[in-house]
Amino acid sequence: MTLEHLGFSSRAIHAGQEPDPTTGAVVPPIHQVSTYKQDGVGGLRGGYEYSRSANPTRAALEECIAALEGGERGFAFASGLAGEDTVLRALLSPGDHVVVPSDAYGGTYRLFNRVVRAWGVEHSIAKVADVESVLAAMRPETRMVWVETPTNPLLGIADVAAIAEVAHAAGALLVVDNTFASPYLQNPIALGADVVVHSTTKYAGGHSDVVGGAVVVAPGAQTHDGESVAERVAFHQNSMGAVAGPFDAWLVLRGLKTLAVRMERHCDNAEAVVDFLQSHPGVTSVHYPGLPDHPNHDVAARQMKRFGGMVAFRVKGGEDVAAKVCGETSLWTLGESLGGVESLIEHPGRMTHASVAGTELEVPADLIRLSVGIEDVEDLVADLRQALDRLT
Ligand SMILES: *Cc1c(COP(=O)(O)O)cnc(C)c1O
Image (cartoon, rainbow, N blue to C red; front, top):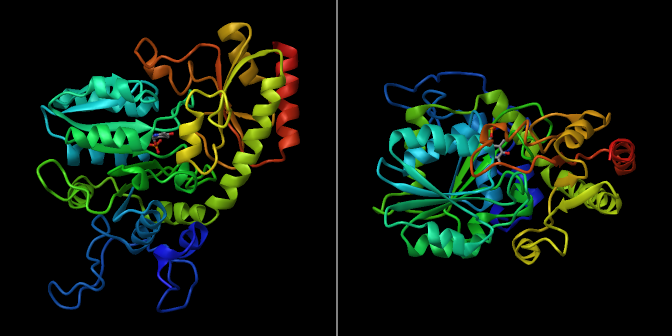
């Protein structure tokens, strides 16, 4: 039985995770080590010489996440942004141009706008939910199109297959940030993406106890000048060194084993929360790709298994009411981040997206974002209801 033919959970639990050959331990050990005894000069055992270059616990995670995304190779990083930075420096050069989404993780936009731009890489902003907008933003020197779907925080949906065609026709690579969907709900490589990035801090880790990132490269992906994308990312991962430590890699690997069951519950709970929000008179709009009236619902239904655990909504009464609601729940914890077992509530305008205020990525002031956890959904709805009943 080869791994590629196994189902998602079988791969999540077994890929890269053979029982330890010396002890039979069914869980890969935390190889908390920096260097390795060599069998004579240059005689590496299993390819390990120094833990920035490779570490067995990290290698287990890298193999597992590659198997879950259908990639040729996976790479684990100290954070999602460390992985993104490595991808950008591996695949772009000064003078290149990138198309980036109008609705994106604030830190990703800051990386393009404040870090990569200073290095000489220009970007244009496109509404990724609209393929024509991506096409219009392409330039002769565009080498990369960056897409997040679902988008953060407005839960827009980009058509990955259609944007892959646009990017490839122009000789550009398509990178998809798959953090919000997780590899359980969506596999961008199967839709034509060249590179997938994750903040494993979120659903992959799933327990709000680790910060990490992952990059997965599609089989055979090449740069415009014919180099292997996987080789370039591998070279830069080692050269720049923003790798995941062994314990962090181990925590993410443990999280991945239960990703499928957690995502099913996140989706069930999110659907019930969306139903409640739609029925509440204090809520003016609900953003969720599973809603039939979501502008790209049909695309989401085509490329995602279900619609995920992230929900955003707007309230009557504007910014102050929205901010107050976020402070008046008890089971929903006021906090940034997402994708953990516990439910989180936040005000993007003043919290996660404060860094994009005044830019083209500014978000509505009366918007509230929910990361729906896996608690009992009746309790989650009751807590939201008491806050909305009192404040809206
Ligand atoms: C959190 C997040 C990131 C950044 O990841 P870190 O692990 O915080 O560095 C990137 N993209 C998305 C969609 C995120 O939610």
